[in-house]
Structure formats: structure tokens, C-alpha cells
Image 1 (cartoon, rainbow, N blue to C red):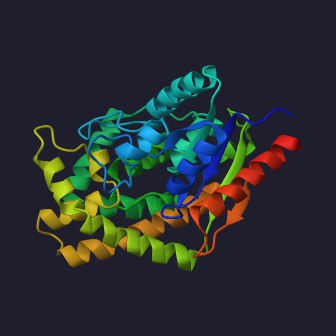
Image 2 (image 1 turned 60 degrees about the vertical axis):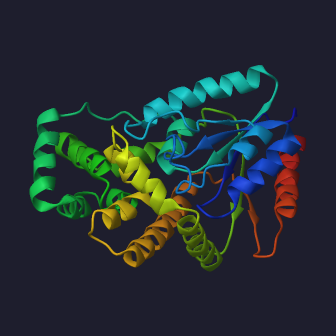
Length: 313
């Protein structure tokens, strides 16, 4: 069997994927495809743990800094750009190392877009009016009643995704989550070796808490303040990113900085839980379990060995 040309690296936020991906890409003569819904935005650097300019010079990265924070960015647009990037990488006889990441972007890329009903503008307008008067939490509570599985995955402040889930229920009488289950039975769009970096939940939570503190120390509050001051501002989608949404609440006077930091930690741990749920859609994943004292080089070697084992099969 020829060496795999498409490698998918799974791992929760703060698991250490980015550092390992740099080392692994250099070893494999690969370029990194970022499957991250917020790294697509320019100037959203600290809060998205974006690779540094030096790291991106060392290893080419794709689907980073392709949109303005004032723009909305859809799964469909991501898949379109990712498909083009993958074709370009493979045409130059290099490997693709896709690093995930955001579950919906991951599923759209690897399993394709599921078919849903067209938008109902009147229904959406009514939902937005309710959100203005009752609060987004009220709509999320309604979603809990009609589609608890989707509600578990969607952040209580993510109006765009809550709106779509309620719209699907309204138009079809079918939960959005049941439509998305079709992903479980489909063939991958890209034949891939799927590897994963996994840490115990307690260790991952400790790393999340430490990373949040590091982001604050690195100037995340100033980054958010500067984004809000831009003439076009931030789109609702960009402003709902974990780390940004909570600090916007702080800068607008609804949370103290200490409260915002604690909320970021909580919401990031919740994101990691959601990622673990979605990663189960890839039962063929060869997981490498990381200990607290494992080096990047050691983890990269073990992941490389897993890839080579598949290549020999």
C-alpha cells in the first residue's frame, strides 16, 4: 500500500495538537489544513491559539486568516476553500495533515453537507425578535425541549445555530440532530488515515485552565477591545467564539474580568466534551494517549508510527 496522502489528526482543544502537528508535518513532508471555525478570522490570534507567523513559515498552513471578523463564515464556504487547498497540496506531491478542530467543519469536510430545508426568512425574523425581547437563553431552552441532542452541542448564546436548529424543527418536524446522524453511515470524502491525540479529562481540563490564564497574560483582553473598535466591528458569529464572547460581556460591563475568565474556562471545557462526542463518528481512529510529561517529539513519533502501520497494512 502506498504511503497515505491525507492524514486527519483529531484532538480536543488544549490537547496539544498544534505543537504536535508542526513536528509531524515536518517529518511527513506535509502541509497543515486547519479545521477551526475561528482561526479563519484575521486578527483573532491569541484567543484562537493560532500558529505564530514563525510556525507558519516553518510549515505551510491553510484555512487560517481567510476572512474578516466582520464576516459570517459558513460550513459550506469552509468546505469549498478546504477542497481547493487539498487539491493544491496534493498536486504538489505533498501530504495533507488536517488538524481538527471544529466538529461541524470536520463533519462537513469529511462526510459532506447534509441536506436541510431552505431558510424561512419570516420565521428567522420572528426568532430574532424573540431573542431581543426574551433573550437568546429563552430560545435555547426551547431547543432543549424539541431537540435536546442539538441543544447539548450548541452554546446557549449561539443565536445563529439555535436559530437554524429551531427552523429545521419548525419546517420539517424533525430534529436537526436526527438529520446529522446520516454522517455516521457515509463514506469519508477523502480516504484518510485518522489518528488522534488523547489526554485524560482531568489533565485536559488542567491544560485548558492554564491556557486560558496564558491567553489573558498574552493580551487577549486588548485583542478583543481592538476588534470591537474596528469600523466594521465583529460579526455575531465571530463574537460568539469562546474567549471572545465572555470578554465582550466584560468590556460591555456585564461581567467582571474574573467572572469572564471563569466563564471562558467553563465554556472551553464544555467545548472539549462536545469534541469528544463528535470524534466518536470516526471509530477507525488510532488514538495515542498522552501523559503530562510526554514531549512533543515523543508524541509525534508515536503518531508517525501509527500512520506508518496503516501504510504497511
